[in-house]
Image 1 (cartoon, rainbow, N blue to C red):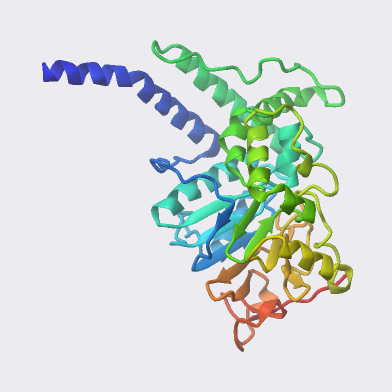
Image 2 (image 1 turned 180 degrees about the vertical axis):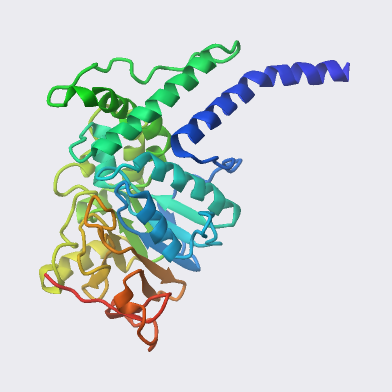
Length: 388
């Protein structure tokens, strides 16, 4: 009798096991990765976290997988085999994985792999929405590359095959078709790109398979200890609206609950993913009093860390390091800058870890000097030079 019950239970599990196998097959075909199992009960997406012993911030990646790995390796977060080795570190990637490069999906998958590996080690990797994530969910593909469109076309081919296999299995619900309702051609898009463009729309539109799976796991505003992270910048109206509310509204939109247009606080020049008020120019160009006012609206916060605007001089800080700008334009499609990452340790020491050889052969002279004189992990001081 017990044997019959076990056999019946196994048979009932077959549809689930087949579906899981198909998903693994599709994931590997698209990304070349076998994803480790997710945590049994993943933590809810945070808006506020306490200070970790080590906090690493990484800027815009824009579809460049190799340079993304270079930045992660520079921070000591992955080894030569691309496995997570960052221990209990908290890592924040401030958005703009999408556009300008051809490895967008591969980076999304790779970051998901690292998230799961980090969770096993007591670490945490948090990804954020940049303006390019918002644009793509909205259907604005002005900055998608030919390779990027092709990557989504390949994704769709494997995803479609996976769905067709699932429809053959009795006991599995018929998968929905993400292409449903989409046109077969697009005005202003060359005919050779129609299939890839259509696949990109299907994948990334609200409730699309890629948007729901990956982008809905992003936050838009994040406080870690005494630092607030945002892709573009935070203004008083954003903090008064509520940081948790901003994250919730963007997540609902990405999941398809609130229509086609993004929430108001993600639109226009004053949107949280678009603001450049504190990231353009040098010390004299930043309204430090306005910045201090914004920071005062979020209890316990003393600095804003942001991406979005390429810093040709590398990671730098203005307004007594209350505004930290970390987008170094590392992607080959967007500046091809040398990788740099920001490290914040438990005692609020800030360091720039840089791949720039100019700073790798100098002698260590001290630490915790602020962003005017920062130490690179792989040798020497990293003086930050701010130019207009």
